Image (tube, rainbow, N blue to C red):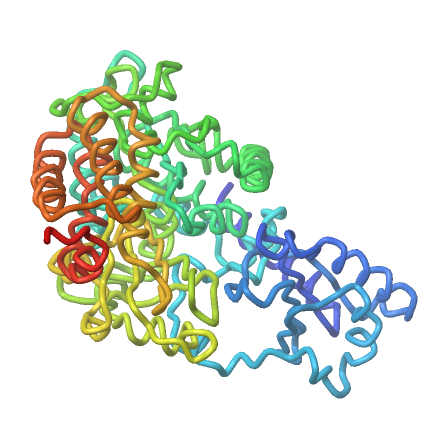
Length: 535
């Protein structure tokens, strides 16, 4: 596949779509599908035929449009209209309105802050292209960055571009992506060479960022992984994805077949000596397998438990070979960084946190859904402008970022910027991108207990601090919420938090105390209120 051949596919696709006067796009990501978006799409297609509009109107399923709380969503171009809460019975009215008056009762303005305050890099194609067709991905520039890397750049030049971009891993820890790539590139290959692994084992409660990207733009991940493979000298890759994501799995498998058919995966990619293949591995739902060494053990067919580091996977990972592990969102940034340049990317965000971040905005907020914002945006802007504020006029109380490994941030820090360093200072983390909003009805001790219950049940049990510590912490929290807690229980809770945080083997145990520590730090009066009086 050459640049000219890619351009030819792009031109044919654009000309084909240009034959139609109207384009009707239906969100067929999991959120809208749960509200029968597939039935809506079928109904619209039938209506187009009934009204004799088949030669003028093109209908297709697309990925996530973001505003999940108002699905099913349907967009109409070139009118630039977005319809919300669409039902199959609305189909006739929508098709009849093409080129005429829009259906005002269904309209969702795209001028609202939810759309206007976002900046899309990872999600730039989501809601616009059909994830089942590689031609549509190519028509918007897809795989162009891969061809550029293979034909115009050396592996070291690719890595330098990623380093200069300032991109940090979006899986939670925020480790510099280019630095990790350079470590793998410098490592001596194992018996089976080197490996690329995409961590799509998204397990945080309330998180659906990776799932949406995989469902909406799967070729973006394949292109990012293939560029990474060229840069570090890997020939085989794995996408480790949760078995609970059947739609993402289906679209990934389809995308891998399509890319292989066009010579964008396999041997002699784009007519060069570079070869790279991708396989899927399905996770069984263990949260601990989001930790990279546990994930690698699971791919190898072993029980998914972490191992001590060093050696790090960059030196000795999958089958003891050097292995590069990045999460879905990290790989989804790569093609755009190469296409637009490192200086373009590094101009977005803050001094130490470059680019954008995708969040799953959920909980007690008007506009729940998938958003992508520049690093450095404030929590207030996310929750009250993009999110539309708290339903029913209730008062905001806290926002949980980073899932079970994160913390609860109170109202007085709403103007804090969202970046790695700021969230760490507040006792939370960026995490993979879960963001759960809570209002005044939330009991923060119950919140801490919920996340501790999750952590103790997901502990692999390999190390004693996590296995026993999280269980004892849960029991203490349960005593407090049952009205049986005493002052000494809070002291014990704090001691256990310190112990588990500093002695656990992996990130699950090391960060499990964060919800407790942050709620004790900001909402201690709620703990005190539920204690049994010592008098």
